[in-house]
Length: 191
Image (cartoon, rainbow, N blue to C red; front, side, top):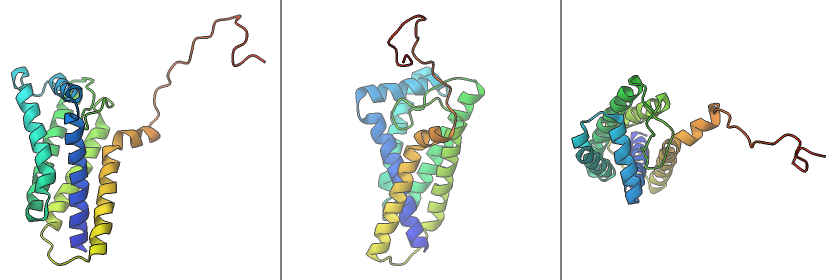
């Protein structure tokens, strides 16, 4: 059973970090937006922002590689450390009452908030369980590998789409509708 959990968690964390890496490097604009959001957080000195962004990008790209069976535990440890660092940056940003867009996956996301801390906390927990499950030894039937891998990948995608999913359950501020001038005829509300 632990072998299945190990496979699922490696796939889950791998999908999350592959998506994060791809989202940031898919275009120059995506990379610039990520660097700008890091600068806006003001968690590292301005002169170190480009180097820090590069280090984050490389570390995120390394996680899926390190999640391969031979080094799976190391991949989980690196993922957990990165997520703790990211969470620390989010906490600092929130305490300063700054509104900085989440560029975790490269897209123009919602402002960083408590839900990002929740997501990271759940991912840290998954990574730590992955460290523990990584000590499992034994063979897994190919069907078991496939089911565990698919379950982990789907779980990873749920984390990637976490903002979108939480938006379904959290009331969003109403946006003003179109302005309708008094006395105008032929509008959608006229009979």
